[in-house]
Length: 245
Image (cartoon, rainbow, N blue to C red; front, side, top):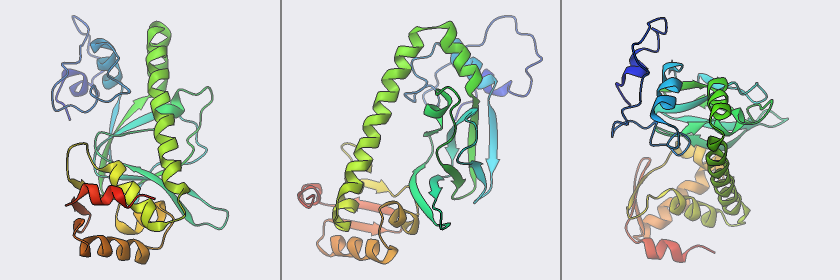
């Protein structure tokens, strides 16, 4: 992440500064470059960072629970977090995941009386930076122009949600998996790391793990992809795109 002064002073808020802190917008920092933060002024990003907390979480440790008041939002520093709901029968329904540089709960803190609509649990040992929703709301009240920027960001989140629904609307397991790969494949690149282990990815795509493995093996036999654990190398993107129903 970043070694800027705002983060170094997180646990030293009693220190009186001669002048306000400013975000240095370091190239390797994933905070200011994220779409939810990049419209903020440098001093506002520094304020958020100074009031943040770095959480070091073990695998399977919960970050938040469905129905809890959304008082904070989070950005993953390292590791991976799965988002899920629990059915009345007690089974998990995977909704998605968040890896390094991705934000969790940002839309929920913007809602009046908002709650988390999912459980968030670490898949592996992870570091997550936690931000105050109240501080962010105060910034929006001070700068009404932020509200328009946030609305633009939220509209993008809605579009992403619609894309997820389009993937899940397909009756074909292979079609859902192919669309999933194409969606997560970075533009202009051919290598993809699956965000979640295969078993959780299968659950997210509403198929059995055996079905997912069989489809991946079939795509490899057709020399469309190569597979190495969670790493997928797309050898023939055009052929993969032609498989979409």
